[in-house]
View 1 (tube, helix red, strand yellow):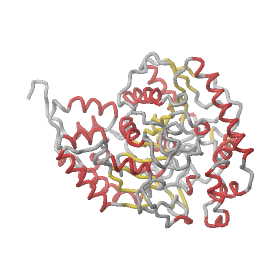
View 2: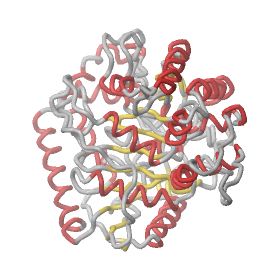
View 3: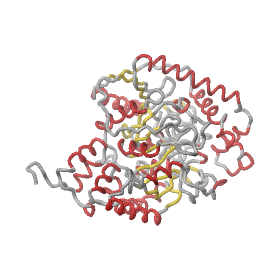
View 4: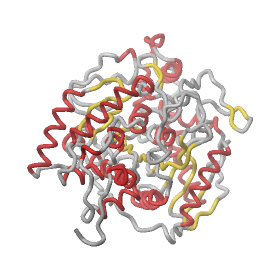
Length: 520
């Protein structure tokens, strides 16, 4: 043993490995320091190990995919009754897959995500799985073939052991439905998890899986990532195969506890597929990026239209300061959009209902009495005949005007990225219903659908890549996040900012920054 070597305890290793920046440090020392064996890790520690660390330990024979899977199943057994994040469990198949992955690591045939567990949103899935979209009208909907995301993950060696909850037809930003009930935030069970990929966000935060699938047509990746302390990527339209090629507001993407895991997953799922005519050629994203030193970044705490909770503003300001400390020039700009929260809501309805999704939703008009309040509202709008070609033209004009506003005020002024909070308030009830409830921010009643969130603008401009990064915990122990936005298809620039931020940011899922399943 060299003179600078030492023994590494399992706890020291876990403390190093659970955050992206610390994970890099851990990986850089693996060649010099002997590491504790798998038997010395607790189940909780195994449950939260990043994929980047797992893969290295699998490669070195110090850990097996079976160990991680069983630890996460134990977490599910203990905490799922509290959070209600899972629709179906596939543990028998997963255990067989984990044993096969263990053998692949032994014989040298391991693939990119060999043995890594995935929480699969109730939208994606394997042939034979029931995918309900959280609707009683689709309670027995069984897939005839693998979804493209599931196919890519399986081809990369991932283990798909759980399906995760969503709101009905993905039409809410809090996760509850008549079919599956209320999904609760593991950081504080009283509060919203985000949606529509809410179950995926909770499963990650609770230690039920290592990475998870999401999709985003109004914030459905970024919102649960913000409310659960996660990294999540809304790729630009066309980067990921989609079953709705004429719906440019929609798209799937990765969710993870660390930046590097998010990027690894994105590299696996971002490939053309025969079922999707719009998918772009594969673009491999690096795991490491240059420093943000010298970059010019614009920052708006309210996108020029929103009322934002002071806790959110402070958390975002503090995170912006991290980027400044890293050498970036971050200017708070008076970004102007001639819109209101009501305009955002109208624009979202036009973009969603004037295309294929509207036509699909309209077919459920005769079963409206079986739907949740919020799904019924969208179905009735879709069936009203109000969202035809005129609405599609309005959506197109809004997208053009929005891009012009960003070009004139941000991109043409030399800014390479734009930062804004992800949510306007972290404090919404787990069963919040925007058709009935009246949210208040800063003592002011805000629009119930668009007022609490700051994500839909970038679905209107869905060619913009957006990364959610975690910022801080609120006074009620609910995570908050911020969005890093770049111009059309500038994925690597968004990743550069997010990656450097992740090196210096608070490391969620370490120390005291771990969900405690409190109930207040």
